[in-house]
Length: 299
Ligand code: KPL
Image (cartoon, rainbow, N blue to C red; front, side, top):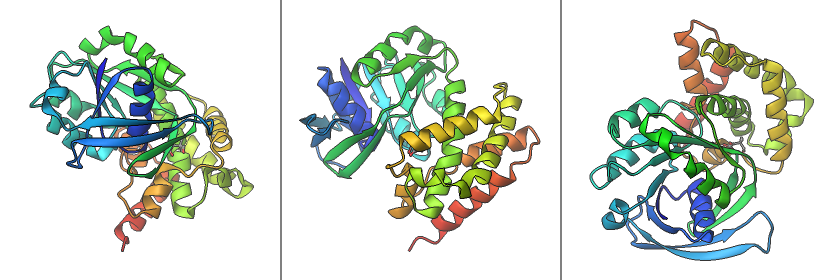
């Protein structure tokens, strides 16, 4: 298939390389103006490496894409979608994959005719520099439609699954998105504030705060129509903390590099939803405030 990957950060590069290894033709759409880009791709097992050269920013390749995969951060989604719409065929399915929630309505407005799908992934990757990416952790990816046209594209879960298993179709993508949001609400701000690896949060000092965050997320999820026990969210969070103990979260890395974080799409989305349902989320609000403070004080 001809696949355009929009955004060549860690997750975009990980998927671009994994899809190229399956024989798909990858084209990158990114802010850098270069027309080709080399990628050194390193799999989970150290000797498993590949090098690819991808075409970039070619409007004819974009318009001939069979799939567009958008992997930019939540706050860049709107600009990314606007940048492709002049050349995008209205029948091309567009998959949006990012941490957090809250971009869907705008994407659906910008792409009223395209099949639109969202994916949430627990795959982890690290960009060592502009030209290399390393797969640092494996976890499930879920794909689902957010409009009627997207519902015809179940087969795309198979395409993603062949590249980076496991990937499953989900009839209601909001449910796995909420579950991932809960984990991100717990791990991302705390690792960014303490500038620590995910595994550090397994220390007993963090139990009360992680529990409070998950309790609030569970209450908002229930109000949104996804009843979930808060113990289940704590357990899910602890499993991710242990499985990714040696990794730095994306928000830790954003703060360490003084980049804008995804706090508004993660904790900010939760707080907004809580407000809508008239629920209090003091533990999450305190974390949101601390990250905002860190961002405002970048040098
Ligand atoms: O998704 C993640 C992230 O870093 O953004 C977690 C699950 C926290 C893994 O690091």
